[in-house]
Image 1 (cartoon, rainbow, N blue to C red):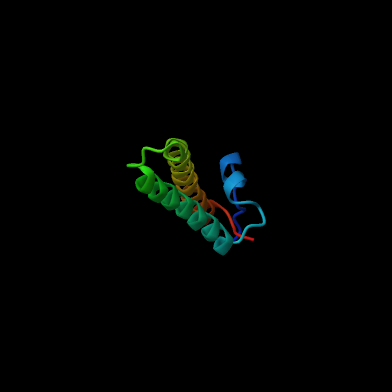
Image 2 (image 1 turned 120 degrees about the vertical axis):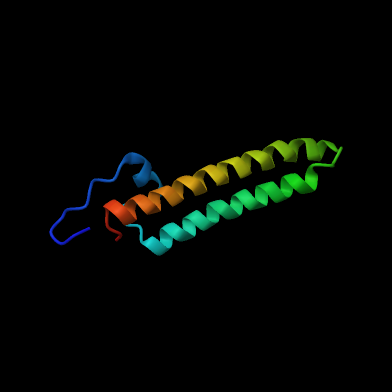
Amino acid sequence: MTEGERPLARPAWVRALAKDRATRAGAHRQRIGFWVIACLGLGLFAVESSSDTALGAIVRPLALGAAAVGLTLGAWASVAIRWVDRHGVWA
């Protein structure tokens, strides 16, 4: 952004993932947390994939769901950080 330009208003999807008072480091920590949740979900799914117990039948869909949510939010958080870098300012 050049001198004298005002930052653009943040879209709702950016405000949801990178709050107005968020710092860049805080947004990166949040993004890394989402990726960790995704990795843990995939790891738990891999461990329980060969389990024939009732617990495995419960854990597998929950782990896969956690991985999907973590991957989705991690990807959107990465895009939100990039949007703020290009169009806005950090707190």
